[in-house]
Image (spheres, rainbow, N blue to C red):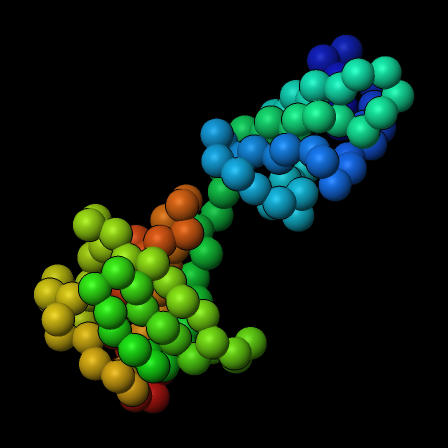
Length: 130
């Protein structure tokens, strides 16, 4: 971390360190250079808490729909299967137009942009060749 006076400071992170990004639970890998952060620690022990704040780029995944449920989509992506929660605010687009969630079908190729909480913010139905 870089302290307010510009000095670089090393802070030990341990298995018990609670990490939050923009107020939500996070992993150490989610913390990026340029984020504002603060730690709480006692003595030379690993930090008890690391709180960071910064702009997080949206995560987009592409794959084929394996299942459509009321609360989640299950996709086959390059890395395997992934379950993406759906939210009341999830938007579905097909050929640029808004469509209802019920229009999604098993086998469709989709791109899913996730919200900060990991749920689907936008589901775009992709063309067969896309």
